[in-house]
Image 1 (tube, rainbow, N blue to C red):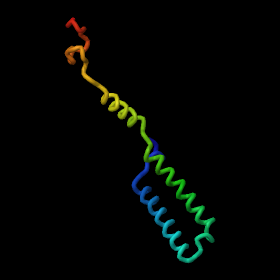
Image 2: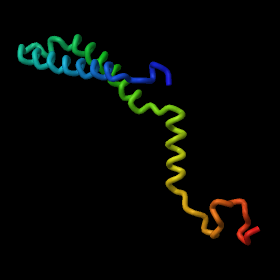
Image 3: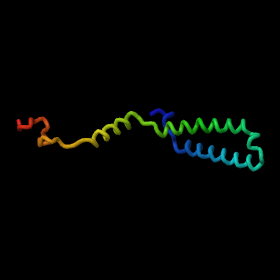
Image 4: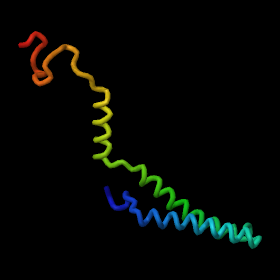
Length: 99
């Protein structure tokens, strides 16, 4: 996994703070009656936050090749059932007649 594919806790905290700061700004502008008057600066801020939020979502759902292989093995094993021929599982190379 490359460094750009990871999302450290510090970066997640920064994103949360960006969202909270935007929320506070919207509330403050609304109280002052200037919410629509600052639409262009709000759009810029929302665009920056949207980009970071998208990166967060992509990184949170990123699956490394190793993790994908482990998941595949587990899924494959979930459908496994013992051989119904009655053969000894310790000697799977033997034919059903014991040879």
